[in-house]
Structures are given as structure tokens and as C-alpha cells.
Image (cartoon, rainbow, N blue to C red; front, top):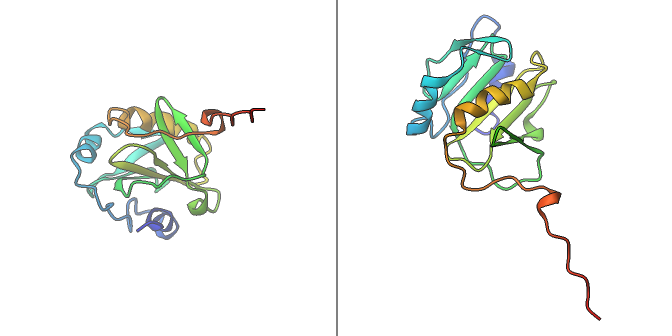
Length: 156
């Protein structure tokens, strides 16, 4: 299931938005159902084209695929960006062919977004989706080197 979104992007035909994209394990979560009511009509310059599976939304011809209710990410050293108060982890091991896979960090349910190379402004996509997931209260946050205290000086 972990590689499903990235694989779904590669296997979907251009004329079949959402084909091959399965709902995430926790897509039935109440927050995922609420998100479905707030999916933006347009995202990253693409029109919302598919919402027929719980927790799944597609913009364009699979240019952007959202899956709500994926497994919560473990602590990681993958890059993390905070966009409008929401932490997003870039899954470098699952980002291929110029596309990106990102997942919310520190929120339950977790939301995964796969973006093809066709979308050049991933930051615009994250701004559009951060407003959607921001109401889910975070239980932790990404930390960076600036968050780690300097070691104490040895005395003496």
C-alpha cells in the first residue's frame, strides 16, 4: 500500500482519472469524509476530476492524486516543509520520474499527495491543500537542525 499512489500515477491512462487508485486504509475516518466536502475545484491549475472512492481525489488527468487516511508517517530524515501551519514530508524514496509524493506529518488522519512532473508549482498545491487539512489538530511537528539545542559546553 505504501507505494500505491506513486504506482497508480504510472499505471493510469490519461483518459481515466482515478483508475487504479485505491482508498487508503483509514479513508473512512470522519475527517477524511469532511475533507471530501472541501476539495478545491481547481488545484495546481488542474480541475477536480475524480472523487468516486472514499478518501481519494484527483485533479486533471491524474496530475494530482490525494489519498486521505494513509498510515501515519514515522519520524524521518526526509525533507519537511511547513506550509500555512501544516507540515508536509517529501517522500524522496517514492518520488520518481520528476513527480513528488508528500504526506502530512503529525496529523491523524494523514493525507498523501502524489504530483506528476506536469505540475511545476508543488508549493501552490500544498498551499491549496494545507487549508483543507489545517483544522485537524497536530499531535507533533517536523523538527530541523534549528530545533535541536546546541550541546552543552564541557565544564572545566
